[in-house]
Image 1 (cartoon, rainbow, N blue to C red):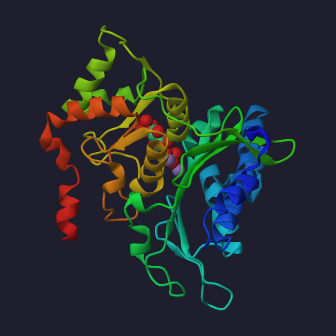
Image 2 (image 1 turned 45 degrees about the vertical axis):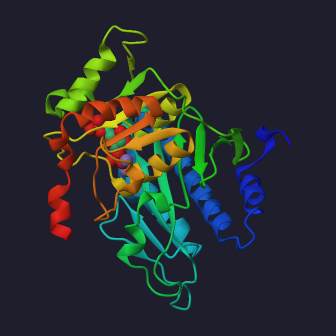
Length: 349
Ligand code: AHG
Ligand code: MN
Ligand code: MN
């Protein structure tokens, strides 16, 4: 069958065949994520329409329409996963604590936990710019059948079983890795199915795009300032092009296709960076590495960081391998700045 005729469901079944001990749990989990993504996609598209037609006032009178879309997306993903009893626990950027999912008989035999950013780049929704959903899947470390514990969620990124994102863009795509490369599926809205449209996605080794919120320049560490100067120099293939959407998912997606680096560094405003290790950086880092790219906090591999808390923030340098390496070279000149999370680590000891 031509790859573009293969649906996400068929693709998962096809790939699961290679694992003898599978129970179908993973397949059902991806199915649920796929379903929630379609529901959110419908709402995201409608939200744009509502704004354009100026019906916001009317919808505000309706209770549910007053909800912000990121809260709505959170609810959709939560309910879809909880109702299907497909995982034993969920952690979300929108929830203070992780959620324990009890089965019908108070026990839950499922082995996976999901961590997610239900709506990434939500500040872009009002202006009709692409937003996304990011998810990350781990096998629990505590015994099956017992309630989940924080340690099930605070695993290193290198333990991820799968990760992916949905980009609600010019077309809606679901991009997924389960540790065997990265594949992109495009939603055919007429049929409601995701089709394999971007098999085996890879970051070009080098790129010419840098994505950073340069408005924060004065607050950046010196290593980042020096790297930006390097990007803007007139030499060889430079100056590079600057592209920043402000939706990590969209910036990442473009950079993976065209070659580039995304940076959200520490700053005097955000001393630990802004992005969340568990909901944003780890899943994107797993995808990046699976696509021949790289992800770092400026000094070390993101996937090696031992998380200390659910909503932990880290600086993020992610994209084409050569570009991330180059940025790390500049960061290494100021080793003091590598201690951005030292205080936190000391507290946990
Ligand atoms: P979220 O909408 O989930 O809070 O994430 C927004 C993130 C990320 O998607 C984006 O790249 C970054 O925040 C933008 O931050 P700035 O507005 O500070 O540039
Ligand atoms: Mn986000
Ligand atoms: Mn979010």
